[in-house]
Amino acid sequence: MNKQQTPTLEELENEIKNNPDNIKLRILYAEKLIDEGFLLDAQDEYRGLIRISPDNPDILFNLGVTYEKQGNIEKALKCFEKASQIKPDDPDFRYNVAFMLEKLGETERATIEYRKT
Image (cartoon, rainbow, N blue to C red):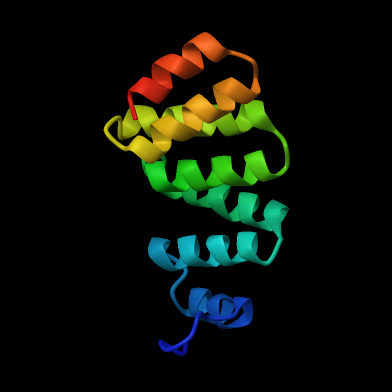
């Protein structure tokens, strides 16, 4: 994999074949899938990663991003809430919880969450 440039999906897939337990590499792969518009594939990768590392808030957050991009606000909210519970001091997690609540019309709860960011 060329360290000077962002790796391609194919390069990442080859690296994963050689290092299937490398969580950071698999997260990078899933992020690249999102960038390339392969949301369902990214979701599958993140769900697999959650089975390996269920308390990783970044994985939960990124899974939530895929749901949000598909318009599935309820699922996105659940992911963001769980990430926020694991890492309550992260303002990005809190902000996304608030933003999803706002999208769902739960303005009172959203305001409370916005204040925590």
